Length: 215
Image (cartoon, one colour):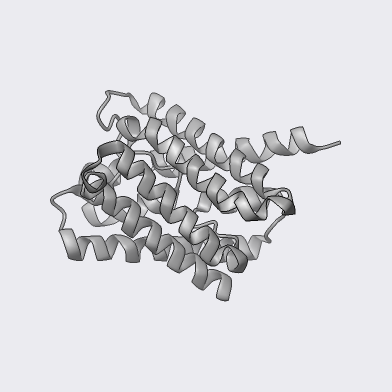
């Protein structure tokens, strides 16, 4: 239960600060500020709850850990439910603070650069692949424990820098679903892309790493 509580809190804070920074335009710093906000909250959570739950705060990450047999199917279900509920809390707090005028940091197909749905799916698959691949790699060796949180946070920052003008960068179904539930409309119609594509990217990353790591 402590693991699930940690995931709930971690995902709530990820949405609060990450999507909150999207609403405030990266605290005035634009895309770089938004990217850094998502990355820095992951660094903070990695060193706060990493020893409790592994700090997945993302169903795509939990799916990769399930494939790599780091967690059981029962734990996976508990993680995903906790992450979604935490994301809803984070989005709810943003709704209370900002209202719906600024979209709560929802994702969109062609955020600032025009994309079709297939291009958006490909972008999210690639971004999630890179993010999850880095997570699996850096957490595969215990000696990397001291730097793992920084590496993961910087990787999330990296994928956001590329992805923000394209899709708003999801790479996390819970982070995308929760704001869309509040905003509704086109955001809710498109949210399936930001659920399906990150999960595909996660599966590809998990099996690719397994193939490379097997002796």
